[in-house]
Length: 238
Image: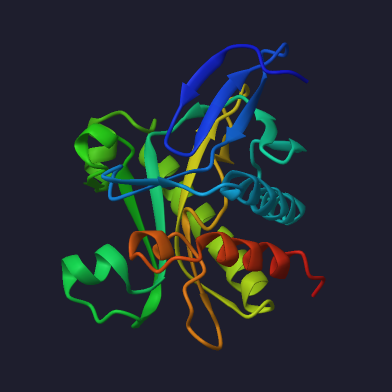
């Protein structure tokens, strides 16, 4: 399968059409961005690590019955996946308070939440990805009905349960993460995008060391080493 036309270029990936109208190719970039693109850099090999990590996690979730766009990893930087119409809602799942949740609401950083928090953000860089409530989603016609919002929440919590356990067995704590969903050719809602430390906060369960893009956001360094360690651990059989 070969790349045809560039369909979209985002901060972390390029999306290409293929000879098959139902299949696309994602090209994972080495670019690093934070704070809605205000901080930028690049780390050689980061894109390949995100592709490999995403491949492991998509395969795992598919085995557990979570429908996604994933088909196969083509090479280090390229993933073949189903074409999907993006639902412009970023689904944020939080297990532990940190980042914007602590800043905006004054919740102590590192506090374990009494239940899994699921939030919606509007996937719109120009607007700064603002928070959405259910009425916003309906007014903006991001979904067809409120049942679809309930489904997004259900799937987010299901994925969280699966990945929390998966990571815990590898001494990684799943703090929070972002999911994206789309519609396939049969109008089914499926998981899309990527599953990597670029959009997952992961802490070492013993030391508390940050193993994700916060190392870039906070100027801690060692981002490639951290991503390599995450990949090594998730490849372990448990």
